[in-house]
Length: 341
Image: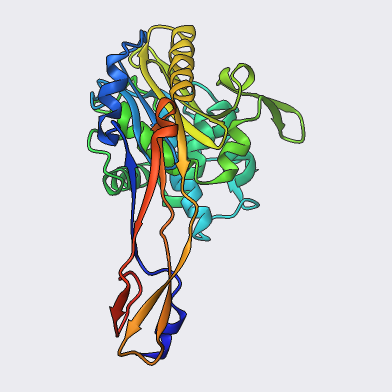
């Protein structure tokens, strides 16, 4: 047996959860049968760590997302920072195009200079369209090139019902700027992997320009919902009122997506109802990882170590006491032994 085999600590062992009367694949169907009364066109509730869908309604319907579009814009910005193509303390210059956006903005002037950090904060907290375009242009040169990257990233993530035409969600002149509640949940899940985003999206009020310009969070749940951490709101006449709302309680993070509500209050009430449903009915199960020893035949060493793979699963709270764990391990394995066997 090769020497490296002695160091194996993570050999794949058959480890299974036996869940009485619980079918993981039926979550969405079970949730829908509870008939939540949500005043919106489509909705999704996702558990962030596993990506499990806990509730959905018209989740694949293509709809305009308004400023929830910026979830993808922010994702590409954070990926550029992670890759070293952009730094928080870089100073960017606002273009005439960026300053012409209108809508939610921080009123950048052409030629005005601002740090990436302040521009990012302005997009996350106050949904600033001019700041979003400034960041996009710094990464791709033009907004059009950045939008092409947005659509490419959407395809990579499996967002099958999405087509972006701009970075900010303004839709007065767009022809086919659409996404779905499920696709929004998918890209939101990717975005909140960056702690900087939820650091900013959980701020109620802040300032930029050395305290001279105030930022107010467009997401009222941050102030009024226990555990709320973000994430992005949006509204236009065409899209109605939309939100992707994130919250964490007892180690579980949920993403609630609402599209096409008739008012801000209806949107916030729907998101609250979804989050309440998730936290009331579901929990995360994590199994403790155990180490085991397996005998090796025809090897330089007689034994090797094996470790169970960790399991994280979403289960209904009513079934938490029905979870049992069974481990099956071969008494012996024949050399050579490889990682993942």
